[in-house]
Image 1 (tube, rainbow, N blue to C red):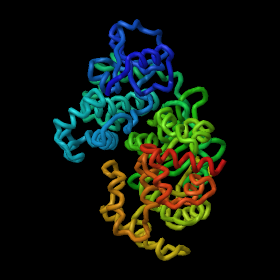
Image 2 (tube, rainbow, N blue to C red):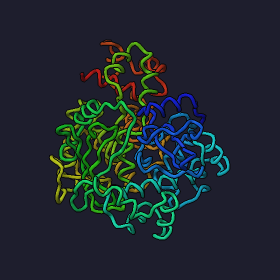
Image 3 (cartoon, rainbow, N blue to C red):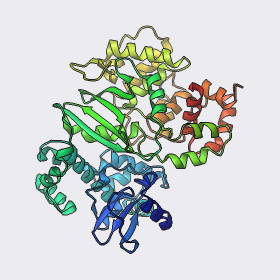
Image 4 (tube, rainbow, N blue to C red):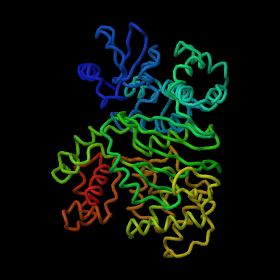
Length: 482
């Protein structure tokens, strides 16, 4: 990926937060790489070089800055300037594919040779796949060292290191300090936490329309599973039978969200944080999306009135697909009540919950596969149970290998799942920025400016919004609720 040095230099001197995570600054006089917003005094231009990713800077021999903490920068937008193959590979790396496997197996999963995949990574990201995975692991280890009190042996294990010696050696090599010395740097500013509670700050590129995100999530919050109160989002989470809760809110005067996790097994922290980054669209580059959509007179007022609108993801693919089936051809409020009833009747009650209004974890596929679901149309009931059986039997897995193009094939044997559901799942579960549920009645009326367009007419109207049709849908929905 080519970087325009003049733009990078201007952003560096201005400490422009809109470029945070878009590139990293290597300082040859100190051997450190920084974010564009780093508060350290500016280095001379002759001592500066630019990298498209943190992994590329690390691969070139630079070590992470301890002041601006590159490990908490917004992620690289997988759809920004990369090929479909690289996008797919990045999702798999984020899912931990290279923690146990090798580049050959990663390349096989995306359908190319290892040599070709490495060549694509160098072209688009400036580094190799293995360097991206290593930097991901190292950055998460640094977050755990700085933001938790977990024993170093657990930090090493959770962040994917096979031995404590390897962990200690690499931390000392990269940061020039031992893990214990790094922890002492942040001990004074750590919040007081309860047992099994962890707090992290995850950065984003401004602007970020938190209010609009809450409006969307609040209207669709499953009672007992999710809630929105006092500007915060709460929900229950479950992984491999373990239940907990999360709480999310903006950090005042910082371009970051605070994530409070209450979960009994710290080994799942990287999985939780990876899902939350996706759920709250933290890697998005809102200015690029807005610059494209604002050219349409229909969308222009919404884009200007709601700067930084995000595409909300989901915690769990199965849960969101069930929620989408429930929402077919009925009002959002009615679907939300139905989802709450399912959670109450078939979900897992939480033993304790510090999150207001959170009482249950949403039922898993095994619970719904044979459940006696009452009060639903027969077609919708069969669709939910067919979906549950497919997931419980391993025939459908909502993981990083799944793409929007796979969904029609995945759902073809589930009667009752149509184009609206497929596109909505692509938006919310797969974070596909170009997914577009054209059959949606609200979108058809909003795009027709009170004339109800046909789905086909709306598809034609939306051609100009590619590749950001999902964001266009969010703007139209937001305008309809304003």
